[in-house]
Image (tube, rainbow, N blue to C red; front, side):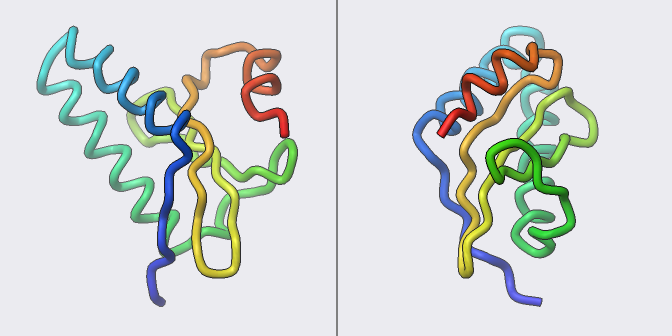
Length: 101
């Protein structure tokens, strides 16, 4: 199966950078592991985008394997749009506000 093209909204990119910076302050190894986990999730999404259920506002989400982060995305015919990278421990109120569209 061919991989879909993946694009990031600017807020999702900022959230990813903030999360990586957080782990970098703890340990460069931890930041490296976080980014590897993130990349593995993106690879999985690009191959199997419908594997994950539709959530609020027609977003789908994947939870990273080893870190408490959800990647929210929208699926289109030929691409994935990553719209948010949110800590799973954030409140539902925050998530709904962040994903409001």
